[in-house]
Image 1 (spheres, one colour):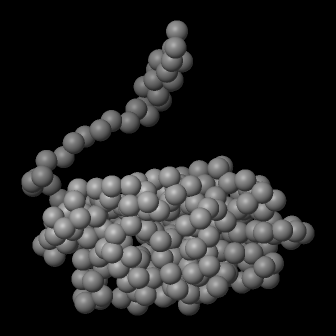
Image 2 (spheres, rainbow, N blue to C red; image 1 turned 90 degrees about the vertical axis):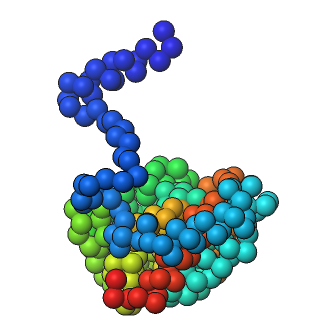
Length: 281
């Protein structure tokens, strides 16, 4: 029977107590929310919700196409420009999710013959990017720059090290300056997922790479999500303009995906401007 194996898998999950369930929440509740990613409480901020509503009224409910066809609006480019400036990078590229941004960064920067050195504690989206990349992947010990050095030793060809800045499960931080140094010793790039650093770390919330003094470096690429500190939805890749240009031409989750909805872009831009104005958050 087609999909008959699913029943067996479901039974194993039930036995192990690992069944996932959806629990819809109401719009209003008396519960104190300690589980969401809305770190700064901006998802319901009046300026953010108005930014979303204004964008929807102006541009419509959807982006209407992929970014390379009709899905890039003036709002998207405005968000990219301000996000790159805020975080200290030359350029930015907005995606429909942080997950899509990570897939794009890893796959497009790890061509055939390359090596991807991945921290053992990385987020699932980085792991999936490694699986989809045409280069070889080597998983190394958690938060260990020397393990990165060892993996890079002797490799000829393109190479990148991939790591979260703040790891989502344990909440610990990557040793970013040491990682950057290990990569530079071997001419490798460094790709960092700053989903949990943007809005929380660095001067005014500019992120972990900014705090570590490596933001804007020519060999550093950073991915962020707009769904945590900014209270919206979507993701972005930040880095040198030539890297961003390469992603526009080579990243499949950019080329073949419908652009981020204008309402989400408007919400993120409003939240970013609020964060700039009120760095105490």
